[in-house]
Image (cartoon, rainbow, N blue to C red; front, side, top):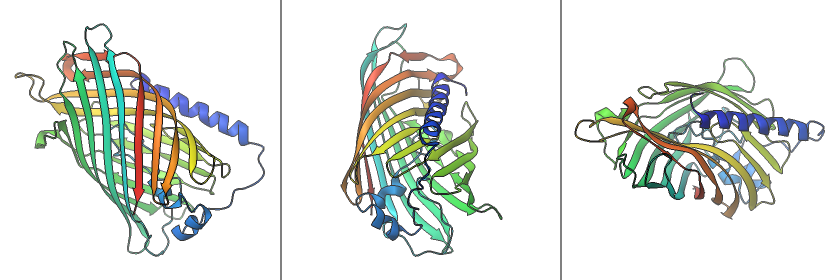
Length: 341
């Protein structure tokens, strides 16, 4: 890991995993198995089951390019088309104006993103996800380092999950996400990127999911990042989601209300015009977040989230030593909505 935020989330994930194992090591009961057919899952938890596939794991901070829906068991068997194959996931996070370190002035940030996805089974058995996503980072900056007013991303994605040869309950997942990362919704061949990933999934039972692989970021400063983690659901009340870059702990109060803790790294790299000399400068935004919140099932196919917490290790940094703004720690508020239809 090349920065403090990434190291923080790896350590945070390890601590959560250690806690989960200790708390539930003596548990003898096995939770009721999740059925692979969507209708059966809905019968178990009618209020929120249609959205189980919409709960994501963000493995990298470049918008939602690396969302992995692993909280339900993977199935590559012949199955009827799911009733709600379309999903929309949107969030907005506000971090108020905060002073800069070692610089005069202050910075406020609005971080928002949306993704539409369509899930299908190719040849009747192979899970495929098609997606379109946008990312927006609005900046109000009064420091002496010139920053754009908005960093933006537009991406599409194709994800395929295949059985891993003869190994039972083991899968390979491939994803590629052509995207444009620039400023103020500007797209050009120079800010085109194609991050990709490949990783293995092992799901020995309905309690455990293990993930191991690699994400590749051509033309980014950090070009290769390993992916690794575990998801542990000991019973119908707890979920330990220990995959960077968004580890979470969830406690299900009932079919409608869930409490959660989360850590997260957000940001990415964008091509911008800094000045007349540096017309294709690359600026990176980094922020580590640690917070808590509630999830509420507004209906059988709509989930709402409200969370608050601390944002730290925040900065905007240009490549080639063109300037850096370290921002003081602050509190954030985030609203998220997930829909399936």
